[in-house]
Image 1: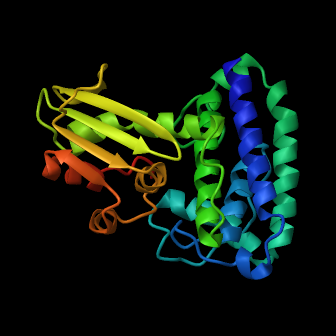
Image 2 (image 1 turned 45 degrees about the horizontal axis):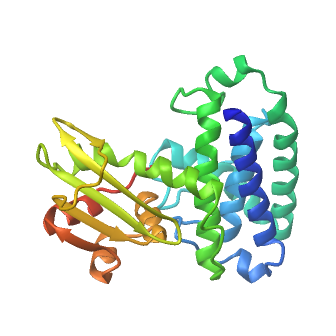
Length: 270
């Protein structure tokens, strides 16, 4: 059941992306996004890349030119297929996206429990394929939102996919609070997302860990309040933390300096 739920979320996010992109002009396809160095088209090409790899399709024999956003081996690997597809129109890339995701949706239900429990054939983390697929939901939704912000078409900000993404992002805050931000022992941190996705998480620092606490303290050491778009853009490293702090998009109650430090360290994904 858990695996089928993941497959369903992949289908939902892919359908949402396909519908979003179907009416784009070529100018919209080439618009820059918050994902460093990538246009709208590049974000879709990136999904074509990963889903093609998961189908075992060969990577193009192509060496992209060095660009500032290619900061490590993963960045260089991710650029191969993206740059290779830049010679095509946005409509052609969308056709490739629809073809590869349709094939993935045909293949996913045929995967055995043993295959899903085995290491993913393309993950650099050595994780099980089922865990990698759950992370693919997050990645695809993040890129969908990159596209939506670029073309000023907000949407797909609630529902099963969004809950999946936010749960994983909120679940990654423990090490950020306790280790990166250095919150003191026995301190409590509440993070309140005010919408469109609404949720409040409270963490208590115990040694070098910060673990969820329930009920939420009436007076936590610090409380951070922000909308779920701001939270996602901080977690995905799309928005500069200092600019977010200057903008007033995050509100604080309690230890403001600790709260500001947490915001500066909030990036969860590479």
